[in-house]
Length: 200
Image (cartoon, rainbow, N blue to C red):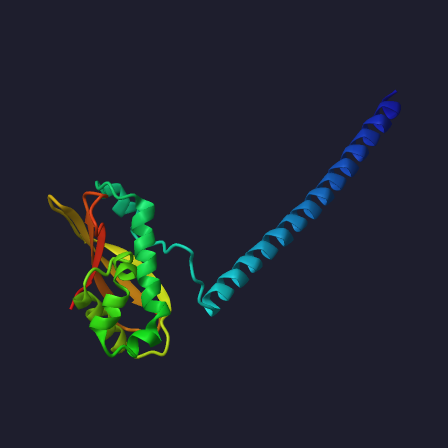
């Protein structure tokens, strides 16, 4: 009786060991496939980052550093999208017109002929346009590429009429950061809702 009982027990143990070996084998294959897929994804991410660093990527709307922080503190009536659109248009005007600005001779004439366009970008006087021309002329590069732009939260000031904050704009291959004061009117019905002024 004992011998008969031992055979089924051995047979069961033998079957369990085979099942365990098969399960371990399947688990190792699955683990290998997952590791291979994960490493492929990591390689693709690295390639994407390298590609982005190789060429200048122009964003549809510029996202500024500390943007969320600024708009969480912002208490004005001018909509966030409008403010970002003004900032984007202003910065891209500098970038797109690097060579044209350098060739400007009669600053007053250019400003008067394009006054409405400039006001829609927050450039509200010929004096401010002159500062832009002089700043761009002093930039030692053939073309401008945006590195980053940020809100300088330490300069945020609220008065009875407007909210002002400095923007820090960094261009690729330019050592100095361009500091621009932005005034946002507390009323959305005024003529110049947003105005930019380069710090001298």
